[in-house]
Amino acid sequence: MAIRTEPFILNMGPQHPSTHGVFRMRVTLDGEVVVDVEPVIGYLHRGIEKLAEGRTYTQNIPFTDRLDYLVSMTNNFAYVLAVEKLVGIEVPERAEYLRIIMTETMRIASHLMAIGFFLNDLGAMMTPVLYMWREREKLLDLFEMVCGQRLTYNYMRIGGVSHDIPEEFLPALKRFVAEMPGFIDEYDQLLSQNEVLLARTKGVGILPKDTAINTAASGPVLRASGVKWDIRRADTYSIYDRFDFEIPVGTVGDCYDRYWVRMQEMRQSVHILEQAIAQLPEGEICAKVPQLLRPPVGEVYGHIEGPKGELGFYLVSDNSIAPYRFHMRPPALMNLTALKDMVVGWKVADLIIIFGSIDVCLGEVDR
Image (tube, rainbow, N blue to C red; front, side, top):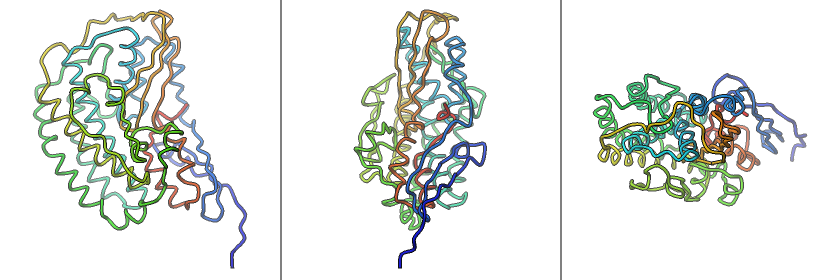
């Protein structure tokens, strides 16, 4: 006999001042089944977009560190590319290669945490994330060599990078690149055919291809749904057209595919790093740029393929030393628009896993 139940609303979060915790889901449930979900954002109260309109173009670079704070240099990269496009600045060759090296190592660091914390949400308490933290710590050592920081890595500059890499950097990076494929194999062996992981993720939280496109999803969330779209190829920027790499694509669009795509993207990032190290030229690391930029009147949109998807900056110049308008297109915010389509009809326990598979960082979501 069916039991009659009344739908009720449950507020999930915010419960902790960190990534998942500064986020609230207003979930409508029928028993344990999700009937509706409303993502509620805005608990960080940063106001970066408005603050940036009162500071010079260079002074705004540290704001970008604090967006997706796991990949600060990637955020730097997207912003300075937009400014360079607005002004018409040509970046030296060596600086272009250093930028690619930093952003691809950051992609690996981001995916390590995305997969580790996703499995933590699934119930694999600490073991996988500690395995992956082991390799991330090696990357943090590399970032510290370059810019002296281990979280908000402020390194990119308008016209290039802040300074050259130290002599011990390349040998350490080469060791990492040589070892990393073996560690990815280890993760694969540990996880990819694990019966609990398969049972909890296969066919769960499916995001169909058309829905993924219509909700403006990007990055691994979009590619897991079978859409072969990567800005590094589709609207290439910097020197990505010089590198050979594949674009991993899922078939179902479920939680497992989102996990799998990130695993394969780490392999591709290692391949790009191998090529970048081999091709790295000598030379200048920053173009000569005025201390106070006054871009011509106009507007520009610059975007890159960040670890979570399309990261873009829209800038409007009125020929002053500060942007007249400064707007960000963060991938985590846009990917959250697909959350409802993924979770309706699933249970509360599945909701946690589906949300974890999106890989959000609330630093760039907050408005």
